[in-house]
Length: 183
Image (cartoon, rainbow, N blue to C red):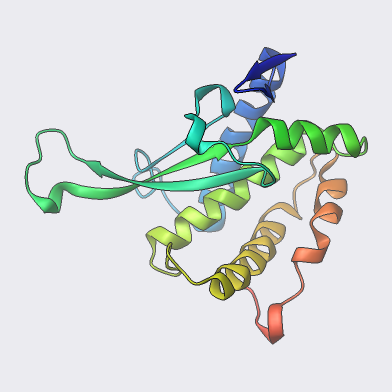
C-alpha cells in the first residue's frame, strides 16, 4: 500500500481508473452544459490525486475538495491577466476507505461521480451561478443543488456499478427547502 503524509494513496492501476473517470466526467459535464472544446475550462482547472497534493491540500472526510488559486497569463503584468484557477484535490484515502467499507461501491463509478460533482461546481463558479466564498448555509444549499445536477448528468449512463453510487448519494438529492436543481 502506497502512503503519503501517513495516508493511503492510489496504486498505479487505481490511478489509471481514476484518470479514465476524469476523462469521462469532463465529457459528460461538457455535453450537459453544451460546451464546445473552446468553451471548456482548460487550463482553468486541474485534477490531482493525493500523490501530487501539498500537505495543506489534504483533508479528512471529503472525497475531494476544490481549492481556488489565482492564475496569471504568462508575461501578464496587469491585474487583468489574472484569472481563477481551480484545483480539484482528490482525497485518495477517503475514497479508498469508503470502498473498503462499502464493497458494493467500485472505484470507477465512484471516481466518475466525485469528479463530475466537482466539475459541476467549477462550471457554476465560472459562470457566476454560485459564489466560491458563500456562507455555510449557501454552501449546503449549493451542495444539494450540485448533487441533484450530478445525478441528472449521470443517471442516464449505462455504467456498471453507477447505480450503487447514485444510491449512496441519494440523501443529498432531495431539494433543500423546496428548491429545485438549477443547471
